Image (cartoon, rainbow, N blue to C red):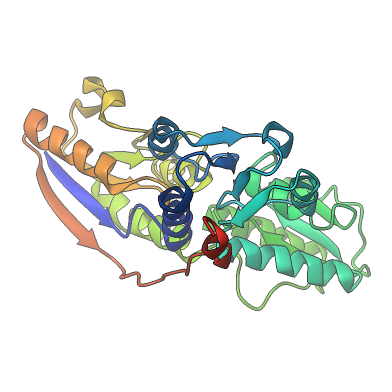
Length: 310
């Protein structure tokens, strides 16, 4: 059996920044830190920090007044920031700068009187945070079919934004539908889907034609990881999204000659290497790493970290 190990894969710059941010906070003040939602959508990462003593919460109301609260990579709404201030929480913002970019676009378009169409998945942390910037101005759509039901006319002042972790193809289909119905709809000069999401999808698309099976390392609640799995499913081959080697099943490999292995942007490299080792030891896999693109993006840690421990 042959394994094609896709590169780029795994942690993106935003995930690296958020994790490094939490690690530095722990180094400065210890693990008595709260995080609003999961720091990133990955079970392995969350479990590691939980074992250290970090507590993940769903509301600032769960955090004792005066404590440290770190905002996750997915961003938060102004309402969450307000609640944190009311409880006198010391906050550290680990929002990915590419998500912050979408928030700022939403604020700008809303202030300019636009109705904003946000393309994204209902209930996702990033979408909730973005919509919270201008809830009266933003309408969420997920599919091209939903575009037909929007309560706007071509004469209305409209703009669209996208969640950063969408399928490039699926987002493109919704954008095409929006442009057909609303030819004058505005959009940011630079697309919102992040470079890492795009690069990981392109790598899988390039390799999938040579494969019988796709394994994606990542958690079920990771949007970008699910989009990678769907590429395989849409191509008609077996595709599985797994947190680690413990979920691998022998029957997946019956008659399989070539496997593509990749990882979502929030999945650590250690789980990838554990998967590769199992495939080598159990199935005698020959591994070939295929690099489609180099990534050199880095985001600075938030300045609020400097205040911790002082």
